[in-house]
Image (cartoon, rainbow, N blue to C red; front, side, top):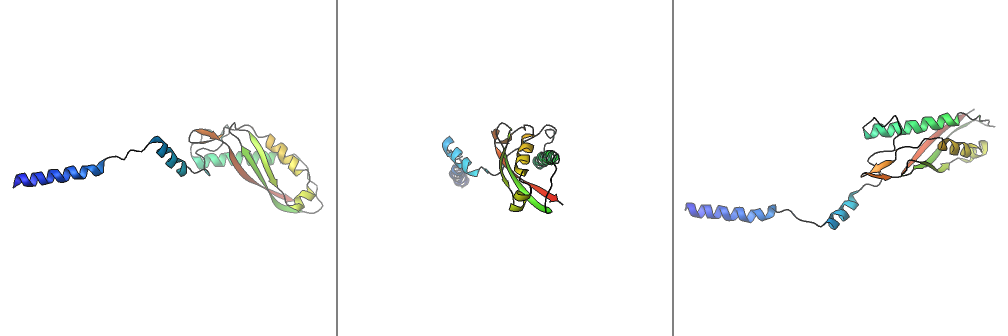
Amino acid sequence: MNIRLLSLALCMLLASCSRWEAKKITTEDFLSQDRYSIDITEVDTYPIFEGCDELSEKEVLKKCFEDYVTNTLYTELSNHTIVVQESIQDTVWIDFIVNETGKFCLDSIHLTPVVRNEIPELPLWIHDATGALPKAEPAMKRDILVKTRFKLPLVLKVD
């Protein structure tokens, strides 16, 4: 009886081991599955300026980058005297790209008609201010340098 019980236990063990086998997939299948799981709207690391490079958390790095860009643009734009006929309280949106080499490229500026009429030089000033930004260490995705697009609000309050 013990032999039957032992034989039955051995058969059950051997039959159940077939479920433990690792499923083998080809490299091509793995890469095609992996391609669909990559989130192209997020980067692993944001562009980095000198001074921010000692930070390690992703969100802290992003904030350091955004603060540096904002402060630089506001400093550059504050060098200009703005004279308007009517007071303006509006937001201008600036779209720019940091390319794979870390260079800033102005993509577009979204101005309201009032701002366009009252401060026609503003697009040129923004272009010059963007050119004053130093080169950054580019963003990375899976250890590959990538370009990133940012949208920055520029709040105008002119009396």
